[in-house]
Amino acid sequence: MPRLIALSFALLSGVLLALCFPRFNVEALVWVWAAPLLISLWWLPRPETGRRFWRGFGLGYLTGLAFFGINLAWIHEVTLVGAIIFPFYLALFLAVWAGLSTTIGRPRDAQLHTPPDSEAKPSLFRTSFHSLRCAFFNAATWVTLEWLRGYLLTGFGWNGLGVAFHDNLNLIQIAEITGVTGLSFLPMFAGCVLVITVRRFQLEIRHQQLRPHLDFGVALAAVAATFLYGLNHTLKPKGDGPSVKCVLVQLAIPQELKWDPAQAPNIIADLQAFTRTYASTTDPDLIIWPESSLPTPLFADPANDPIINGLLEEDDFALMLGTNEYDLVNDKVFNSAVLVQESLQSADLQLYRKIHLVPFGEFIPFRERLPFLDAWLKDLIPGDFTRGTSTEPLPFPDKDLQVIPLICFEDTVGRLARRFVRPEAQFMVNMTNDGWFRRSPAAEQHVANARFRCVELRRPMARACNTGVTCLIDAQGRMISKLEDPDEGIFVKGALVGALPIADAAPLTFYARFGDLFSGIMAALAILLMIRHHHTASS
Image (spheres, rainbow, N blue to C red):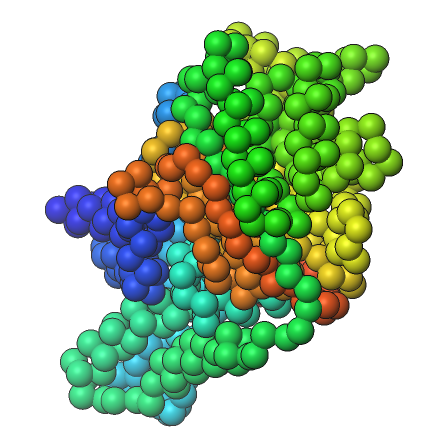
């Protein structure tokens, strides 16, 4: 029976964690989702010390499978194999965390209270210090493993625990120091203290021996300090600076039609119609088309020249669009972004080649070493894209501004985006095609992750998508405006017009300068605590 309860609690934690993210967005659960799992790891009947890690590993793996199975269910829209394999891989990180939590990070009842008949002199804050050490270790280890998840095998840091706060503007401002991965420390630390506090009260009432709960006060103070830090930022008056009037075009083309040659004339006609209409009526500085917006590669098809040049000749605006770019000489293909104002032949044309490619989307990892992967997926991904190398921002034509170009999931990768930051007036442009995932929660999860780049770098962002979420986000992570329809929701065909405010000379944030240093410090401290635990256990 205890084993069945432990398995049920592990599954429950995975489900509760999934409810924290889009499309459910039950943010309050981020503080308590781990409670059932922690009870299973710490206080349900457990095996001897030698097997505790593996029991915790198994329970954590079950929690991870439940979470990622629900959270990433939309992957089946592209590949059923990926939808099965991905959760089994990602659950390993949560499994390792649970194994460490049930051994090194486990609070001991003997240290959570002092029995009345004990000969040891009771210490006023000993139990609180033990609680804080356990909570700190679990939170630091969680941050470390999330950080590793964002790096290993090109990285997939999607929907870390801190992302659950994407709509809580006051709590997310600390990400300019910690990054979104470091933000995950707060709910895990506070959640562990909350669970331990309930256990402490249970023991204290049983033994009629109350003690001060300094640990609970520290957790509350950490949450309050983070909230007040954010409040100071969100209440600041907006500074003087330029604004860029943008038109973001979203055609909402179903993925099965996007590359159908029969649809090419309609796609071109729609891009031209939206561009002409809004260029003449709104006088924009910049019109943005989504990722791979043209039916054929921009530079490889001569028919594209008169289309683009004709639009640019009609009005005075800059155009930014996504295209596949072929290098026939070197047999390479890039996922690229182009920024141009006068014509495709002019010197003002700027080009960016995507750096962070999506595994099993834009390339097959180890394609040559593992031929069976190529055999499985070659119909879906016949060839690999080539990574770009430049992290130079793109100069905006005729303005003292710089564009940070981010294609597709690059707006979810803070360590990449920060490499474009300069002490100049800048804004980010993301072009993406979430049409692969149809009307699933993928688009909402994507923008939830993307908002943190604005906070981390204090640069606003314009997002133009083939299908949702096309929007403007300010430097506090606030969504200024979003393309939405009462009937179709975010999956609507249309254009979004708005002004993106930009700081004249935005400061370089701590995160922009030092990246995931906070997460690195947490990793170092977690390792030191593991070494100390091993030394204590063996002595």
